Image (cartoon, rainbow, N blue to C red; front, side):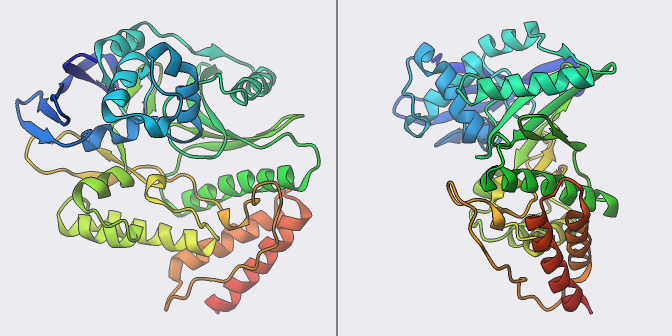
Length: 379
């Protein structure tokens, strides 16, 4: 890895307004010095907080490792990668990492010359997704180094002259097994949860469910991408909390600290509280800090400001299969003094699930029961 690595920043407009964000210098014995484009410098023990989300992780991160570790001369286990290994990997193959930063000149040149969009019809899209999964299951589609454990891939295609940058989750083969059916139900539930929040006025990505003869796909627009080359600066709650709070208690508790420190406004804090309670009321047991993100802008002063990015990964994970089996579980509402609007939205969500034509009868019964719990709690 070079001793000094440039970090490039891309804006909404793409290449035409790209600029140097700063440089990262690796120190002998460990640690880094970051010097921003405004000549501000910082001595760091590990990767800067704004690069943490670029670290390969989750399902796609493992595919990234599988595709590139041998070429890089790195261990084929991500858990063994040091910070220097991460920077080296990103500088060579990280041109499509989350957010709007690109590490190193090799990855930057790959971004400049990349042209991966595919023009597809509706039928062609289904065939394309089926083929992408066939390859992804074998571990050969690196995509970007996005987080998250659910099987997924990254795609960019042109649909009716509209460039679509998407993240696509997929079910197991729809072979009639209870596990495959349950994952189909959960992907549909994720779409319906976001549609419920959207109807209330919260910002969510454009999503849709696509069911082929093989699988169910949950397609979500990437909120860190614009067109062919434009990008938007984003950062996960996980990276923010690690850098500025260090508690990782609840979304609401950390949001309160951020507002007290002037890093988010009161509306943002209230939205986070609402979404967190909504998630608890729809049996989302996977609301870790990587499942909430923010937009941010490199500051001209010495303080950071964030605003909530579109919501994602909101689904009733309480009902996810356990390894290779669907386990019967009884859901109880969270014990709170007031369910308020979050409870009303959760009631609407469960009703949507219970009437969706592609949801299984078994999961519809679960939805009906949970809607009943909320109806009684709200009355």
